[in-house]
Length: 131
Image (cartoon, rainbow, N blue to C red; front, side, top):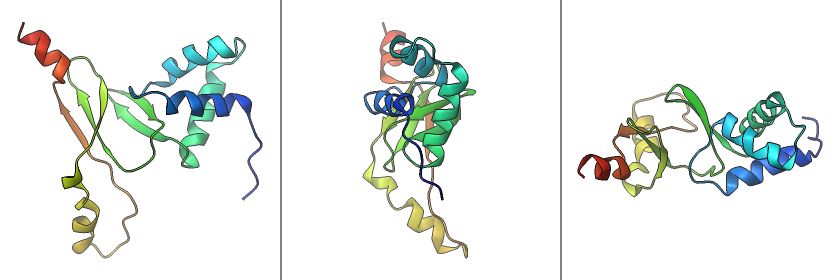
């Protein structure tokens, strides 16, 4: 595989995602990158997000609420999406660590990764409902 040429814009996109916990969409990334690179195009942002996801530098969370979200955190973890506000939240659960092993017990192929998604109502929306 050819060596990937350094890109200041791609590095900025990755750094931006590493600082975020809210799993932004490509449009949110684009709006923030325009502050640094006023001439950056939405296409450039999409291409760099796709490339970063393809090479494993970020995670793409496809079709959460009908739109892709991006996560700078690449280690295995689960996600929750609020059905009311569409917020995507990281979930930590040691009890899910066995899923890959359990799934492979009755499967003759090789499983290399998994994705667990939970849906419901987030804490903030529940508080709003109860007030």
